[in-house]
Length: 259
Image 1 (cartoon, rainbow, N blue to C red):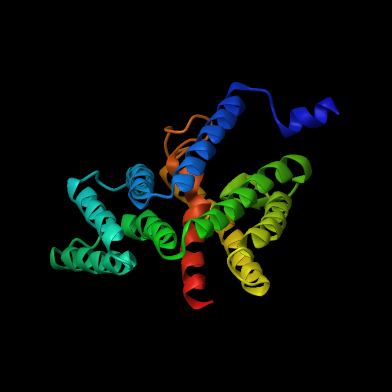
Image 2: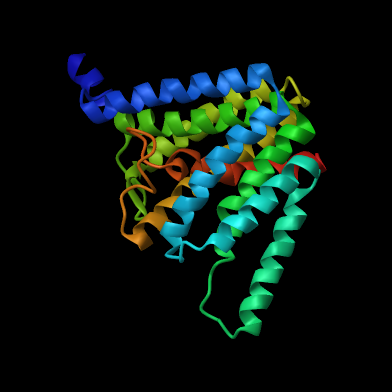
């Protein structure tokens, strides 16, 4: 029994830091959404966005230029006042690509930081402003359980690697996380939608969160780094913590607009 729990929860400083950081993050999230003040949510999510934006610039191997942060700031301000900030982000991409074409700078990939993580963060905030705090809780609970279930499920039952991009993650863990997240997330979603809609949306966001994790693993492998950053003790960078949430936000916003 002792070896089982030592396998499940290894007793080392890294894991202790991971759990303490997780508790602090959960506490902050709960406080923000209990208060449910749009400006406070905008500031907090915006803070996370800027950190993730900085990390993405490094992962993509881009120059850390001021104009990129100016574009990010403009888009985030638009998100506060406009119901559909994603359109502005698409316009920004078109302008950036057009400018690089005019300058014959065909190797520039600055637009990548607008595609990810900017648009997913805009989608996340759009879900909050358009569909309310309950929907955000639904999203966060589903993704968090998928991630946690995959972690512990992999520790206990994991045998088959999920992908060469992330050899520590297992197929068994991902399936356990996916199933548990779909079941629990569906229950939460039924506070907002009917059973069929809640089940389908939860199923989709639980599945796509796995690929969000893998995409960030690919970026880190290409950049030859272990973590996207070190701002969160035991967790790494901001993108390490929200990668699945970002992918799921895009899919959830699309589904909520149609279902």
